[in-house]
Each structure stands twice: as structure tokens, then as C-alpha cells.
Length: 200
Image 1 (cartoon, rainbow, N blue to C red):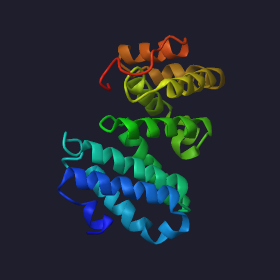
Image 2 (image 1 turned 120 degrees about the horizontal axis):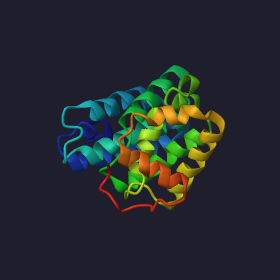
Image 3 (image 1 turned 90 degrees about the horizontal axis):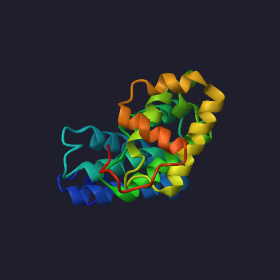
Image 4 (image 1 turned 180 degrees about the horizontal axis):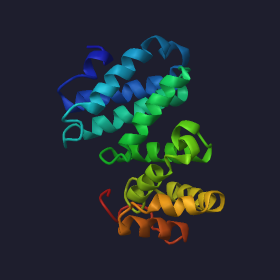
């Protein structure tokens, strides 16, 4: 069976492996992947939006689908409008929780995109700041955030506080107190990476 067929399989292991393969092709395939972009995006979007996408059996595969969409947006030469749509879908789904190795890669990718001031990630006038901080607050001190990601988040928090001032405080107002406290500990250099929570 082709990767295209397997990406829609009802077998969660087969679906996850096929979707992971699509992500690798998007990242390393260059122009040879171009003819398959539209079909890949449609199938990955389908995998990420099915009713059972977040179920225990399929969530790891869904994590891989979201990761693959991010790889298409970052590594393939696609129209800016399509890239913006992919990044919007990608950001809306984060954080990843089920596939720990893939979650670490994607959360590191998010940090890199924020540090690079990617306009689709930050949004007009930093309109996505609250969403980004919410993601950071959920991954900090879990297995989906390692020491390097923690350092990256700390740098981003310091830069945001220096450059955006009160906007950071406003963006944090909707967060539950435990998540706000995790951001505070991270900014102060007190956060311990990984393993303290299951992912929330």
C-alpha cells in the first residue's frame, strides 16, 4: 500500500508510521516532494481533524500529522497564503502530548520560529502572543520540554518582557494560576525541565 493510502488507515500504528514518513519526505525531499504537497496537506488535515484524532489510540499519529504540516510549511516552497494557513492549524493544535520525541522536536521548532519573528506564528501586532505563552506554560516542567527548550522559552520571555512590556502581562491574564507560576519560574531560572507533569 502507498503512504497515501496508509495515512488514512484505521490501524493506528500503520497510520502513525505513514504520517511520520510523510513528514520526513517533506523535510528532506526538496522539490521532489512538490507534486505531493496538496494531497499530503489534505490527508494530514483529515488525520488531525477526525473525531478520534485525540483518542488514546490515534493521538500519537495526530501529533505526527501536525508535525508533518509544520515541516511542509517550513521546508517546502509553497505560496505564502498556504503557509500561513498551515501555521495557523499547526499552532492551534499545540502542544503535542502523546508522541514525546515528536513533541520535543515540534516545541523546539516553535521556539525557533518565535525567536526568528516568524510573522505567521506571531500574528499581526503579536496577536498570537497569548496562545504562544499558553503553549509554553503547558509544556514547561513536563516530558515534552527538555533543558534546551526551557532555555529557549526563558530567552523568549525575557525578550518579550523587554520589548513588549505590559502586553506580556495582558497575554498571561487568561492563564490558570499554576501555568502562570510555571512561566514565572522559567523566567526566574527556577523551572526544572521534564517529568514533573504528564502534560498539562
